[in-house]
Image 1 (cartoon, rainbow, N blue to C red):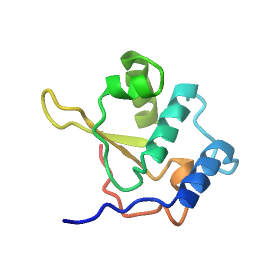
Image 2: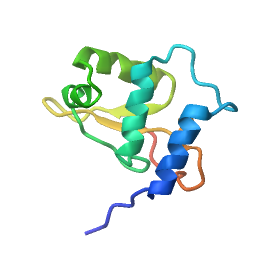
Image 3: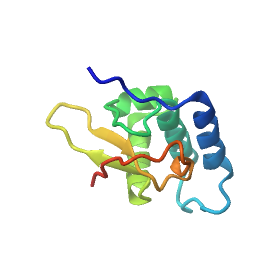
Image 4: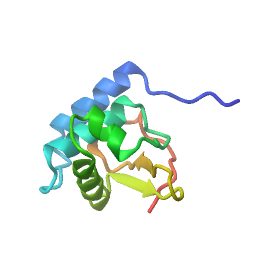
Length: 118
């Protein structure tokens, strides 16, 4: 069984600092506060090199929002190139994976050869 590679706490802090204070990589103008909260959630879930399968309902509960707001956030983040979504099948949660265009993921420690999804 292969052990999951996790980000260290210091890399998480560095990633969050990059996300919130990245001046050299401006954020897309149409992002909403929930989008940044969602990316923060992905970073805290340590998803730099793997997908998550949380439902939109579950993510909405964790972000104190509703499923429709999460769906809109997913669409904006995908359009910005910050996440990828892979359809898994009927009745299954889609796989959500961060992309390296997220300012937070542009650290040496977070950079991996992660398969891009469409």
